[in-house]
Length: 434
Image 1: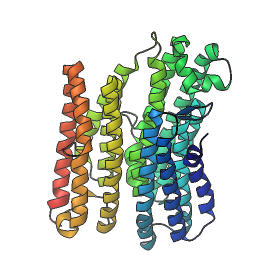
Image 2: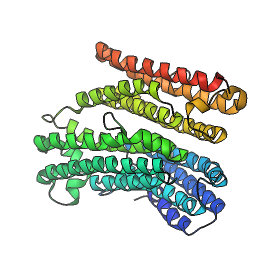
Image 3: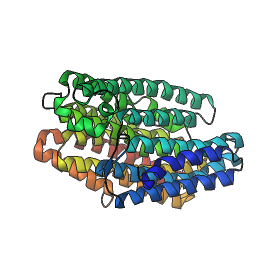
Image 4: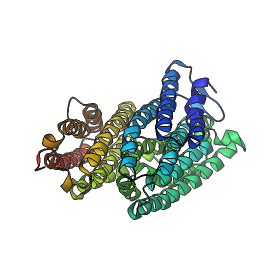
């Protein structure tokens, strides 16, 4: 295990333990940023290290991208948290005791996600995601209001059900790997499972993939398994919303992709592609229409995350080199853009004193700098040029049209519906009567 990989996993977890003992908010906020900066530097260092695969950890071309996005957005969110949480203390929404644990939980959550992303052991992957889920449940309910506690409880129930189903699917993969690889660690090592995939039992793989798709699909926020996501975004602190939307959904998707590769490598197992295409399109089109009914700005962008995760799953379901590249590019662009949008939304909600769209109007007059930032973010996430989301969506649509022309109609329809909803909301927020 390299020093950089050890720092990516260990530094946030060790720093979390240290910050629990620090009562001063400013010191803990600075410690949070410093720890995340060190984690980002370690993530960048992985680019220059040789690829490796051990019994428990792996560094390859797949997870390096996820780790870089995770550490980059984690660092920027830690910087945003410093000012955001300070304002929450000033207005009395958070007490120093809860803030003392906030930064520690943030770092522990980042360490758990990095653990999942760097795991070569499918059991360790599950542990990392489960730990991140439990920590974010506490962070969602940190305001201790009835709505926040209800959102945290719903997230806990649905997240636990999903992660339990994923656990059962992981056990089935382990059982399938016992025959060619033997008992113990080898049958839980992803690289060995992938190399032995044609020798695995097809029936067990099929059953396992269904459980894994439903289990990890719940964490990805795919419809109709998405019910926890809008409430968690709306009721938790905005930095948590940024991490949930920009990072945690990616980690669950990463886990699903790892298992998809194993199932797809077996010639007689179920083809994961069509199933992922259907679930992706369902999520995309459902979320696009739901955008028109939102009255809370954070719920609005929560459904936007469901829409884009649906498009990403659709791209990976299509498969092929270009479609997979387009899916990874869209995932990266969505994480960077959506976290930036939530940063703007957090400042806007604090400036206006509300998250309700009816109370956020005329930003171009009252807060022109925030208006420009939000407008740029919404135009970017809508897929307009010259932003990166435009290129990833263009690649997804053109690749689909080149292989299955009639299928391209559905993602285009969903994206146009979503664009109309965001444009309608943006018009009132920017240019309505203050």
